[in-house]
Length: 174
Image (cartoon, rainbow, N blue to C red):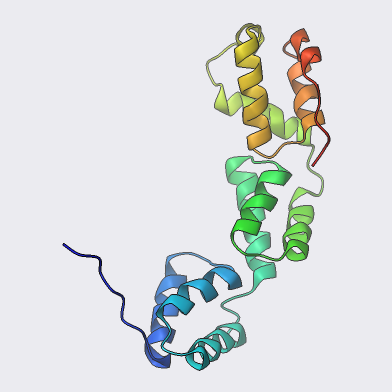
């Protein structure tokens, strides 16, 4: 079985393809442009379809970013930096991403968010006992940083469970 070669699409077919792609999940303007670019017969067809998508408000980075940031915060409990990074990977401009994340995190206490994250990730584990081991403490710290939490907040919460956190040299904030 060989690699399937996707045929290039004219404007009408590209429009149908765009609708099919957007029906599966929301995409940023950059993501949808990239997908359509691979399938478009011409640049004119691509621009016409993108203009139509914007006209029908089917592609709006501000709305997409706000929904994405709120969902990642509520459903996954991720921190600010992880959500910003995820939005940048989805080709959302830095200014739009920053605004969406700021709105999503308004009124959110990062340390409480970290506590909930640790409780969920280490359920059925006594964290005070578990974090006595240096390797577990370092692992928990790395996990919190990967989840997008600031170093200062991660250290502050981990200090509640272990005095060994003092050994961490805090890197500068992102």
